[in-house]
Image (tube, rainbow, N blue to C red; front, side):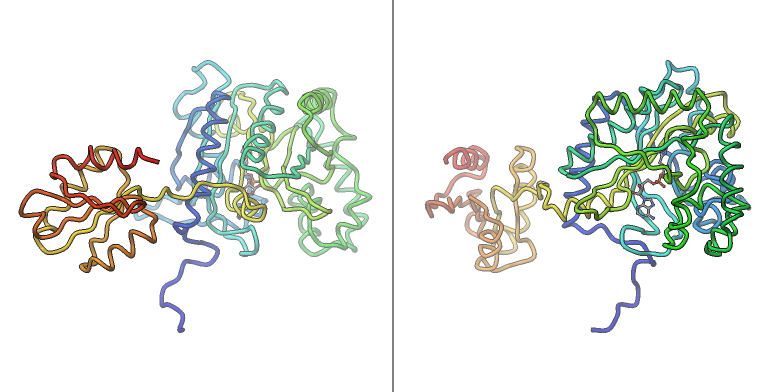
Length: 426
Ligand code: HAM
């Protein structure tokens, strides 16, 4: 078969009907978890001023340097498709004066995000995230709660062998010291590092730590660790978060190389993966604290913490373990019609059944009774109602119980009563 002329753009995909049940299950689960923890939903535009992302995510990150989809409008505004959700939520918090609400403000969102990445397993150019942001609170219990909410979501979706990887990258007070020590180390080893890492020593040395190149990884095993450079405040924050995780008995490990790919983080950073027999799924969720972002965007001094789940990656895990999702419910009854008059009269009858909350399948495109009954049995309908030319003329309708093969003729006005009686029978 020749390739169709038009296909989805590289790294983007259709969400086909057979996958909708996974999205619905994720939405249903998230609504339960988020409403328990008192999060309110927020939707922000898919396009924002490019500078919002450059400022918040950071000009020397891959996301901004290589992955923004940017366009110029007819009015000459430079906008980018959002690569992540935190920047837009922080912008909205400032723009709508959320600072005057009781703090912290707890928000959640779900929607498509865009990064011009090299497409590979679990990495798309359009993907969906479900995120939370708790804004206006610096207490480490909020960091632990963010991790807990992400973990609870993944757990309630049926995912197993989850592992939280956690680190602290310090704050403005202690990170410069760490950065200095790291740069010194990286300069000494620079001849053994890949070209990208060599460049990053200058532009974004922390990002060198999560280079996937094996040779770099070998060198980096000796690199100084951020936790050894934390100031007292950051040390206490990390200790408290870990104690909360201990209380919750959540599985975690300290990962000194976890730095995350966005510049706005301070103190706690974390990711959650599924790990089985040493095989890691890649991050299903990631987040952390970002105490400087709101200020950087022109708002007040608002400490905050948040995280996001990557929905495609979660669905791939759900499929792998055969997680239960409820597929669309089958119709309880099937409506067959024969002849032009019956067809004309069928839409109002169908509407009456819908208003009575009866799930109905129909075969409007098929004119033969045989074809329609074939569809009814494929759908597993318990009752078939048949409107022929004669019944249409007499305001009658045939009702066939598919389990007993009994068929009766009833007045059209009695159809709901008759169908409900049969559906009630076991
Ligand atoms: P992130 O780690 O860049 O964080 O993305 C969160 C999750 O989105 C990842 O763990 C991954 O599951 C998924 N993800 C990211 N990029 C892709 C991609 N190209 N294709 C498929 N899935 C992807 C953030 O975006 C932060 N805004 C999270 C946050 C909220 N931090 C604080 N608040």
